[in-house]
Image (cartoon, rainbow, N blue to C red; front, top):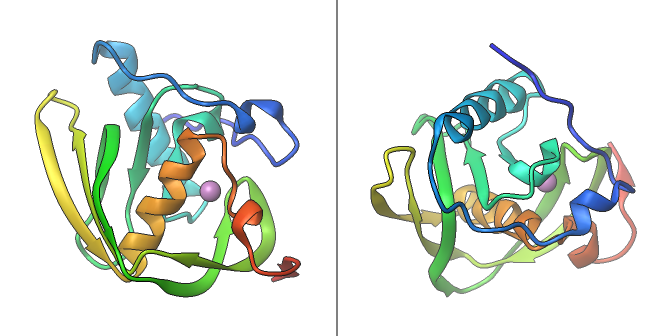
Length: 153
Ligand code: NI
């Protein structure tokens, strides 16, 4: 188990656009493993590579709904439908929360750690997390989209 340091809001790395993963190599697999360890250790439900200082299009998600860990490499949305508004937080903005509008349903395509393409449909919290983590790859934080000021939690 290897934990990586989670960058906090204010670090300019969080504002950069991440680059596609060209080759899934041993470093990529180590990164995926470390990201999952780091996410669980921080009691998060998602973590994107730029949050640990790596500007690659990778994120991990475990929405806590029993479906377990998902790893996304080079993800993109095939579909976004509807809208939902909910309270959101971020491991890079600890202790602060805000209301954000997200799609109600998303369909995402990505590669897994074996380079296999897969698609996943997410609704409810899963749609929120996928949208939130994808935003990290674009240098966007939830506070950019929050309705009104963040609240302490
Ligand atoms: Ni976040």
